[in-house]
Amino acid sequence: MPSLPLKFFDECCNEPAKPWAIKGVIALDEDSSWFGPAGSLKSTLMVDLAVHLAAGRDWRGFKTKMRAGVLYLAFERAALTRRRIAAYRIRDHFQSLPVAVAGDIVDLIDINCVEIIAETVKAAEGRFGVAVGLIIVDTYAKGVAAGGADEDKAQHVNLVAANLKRVHEQIGHPIHIAMIGHTGKDETKGERGSSAKLGHVDVAVRISGEGKVKTATVTKGNDQPEDTLTAFEGEEITVGTDADGDAVTAFVVSPRVVQAGPSATSRLSDRQVLAMDALKRAFKEHGESGAVAVDLWRDEMFRSGVLDRDGKNPRQDFKRLRDALARVQRIVEQDGMVRTGYSAGINPVLAPSIVPTARGIDSPPLPPCPVGEPRSRRSTL
Image (tube, rainbow, N blue to C red; front, side):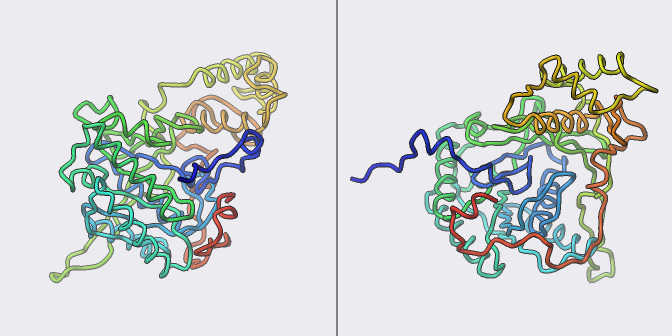
């Protein structure tokens, strides 16, 4: 019997950079869970993410590192998913994007699901001409229930997790699997079902918000900040007319920049608190008209030990802290100066990269990933 493949110490020290699909959001060879209560626009947000990845366009201020195909497994409301996708062609003039929707339900407990999903990916790639980089499962609960299993039972959830790992292996090139889930009756307690699912995923994102504006917050990230990812709201797009001449509409994510609600801004990590304390000291020593130079704030973080000059990448550490605090509305940076809070609910740090640019470009400047390209090359994207 053959042994398992091994990587030894020196090989572990030469791992390539994390293969981000959308940097800071989703990476290849990982799984994520996007969950929220009914009406939280979680599926709407995932369609928006899918379209941007398929177009190779930056998503809500995050850099898209590749153009990849998307397979959307719509275990419920497949027609609605298709209408949402159609809305992007009408509103944004996207054409021929590598996105496909499958409307049949798949039993995620049954090991046969591995071959079904892998073959469906292969069929989609044959049409796309680029590799599938993202599979969306909408919803996870329906895929578990399809075989009579229970998402509350760890043994069933672990069977699904094992099958999803086999899907990664069977496809043969790096992908990301994003699962859409629900909160329970108490929305503050996280995702509904067994905690075994949280143990399986690399990233968990909670969608919340009682009004028009919703907030996506990373509640688990293996190596990314646990803070607000983005705030967003929806808009209605007319995609056609019915037999009576009435408008057929779809609700999709608006590209407009919005401010997250207060609940998303109340909790900071310990390191973010220290960064804000350093900002207060920088204000006291060097502030002018309620603002201070970004470089002086950074210097104060080095002086006080919040940042390590001898660290692997102190510049990236600072950027990560700064961007995280901007996303949770604690700072605003403009013209090389930083101040606390926002005016008019607009985040000028994120605004330039979120505001829509020219539309109607069929092929983005980012190169596609050819089907069948060796795993060793694609994993460095």
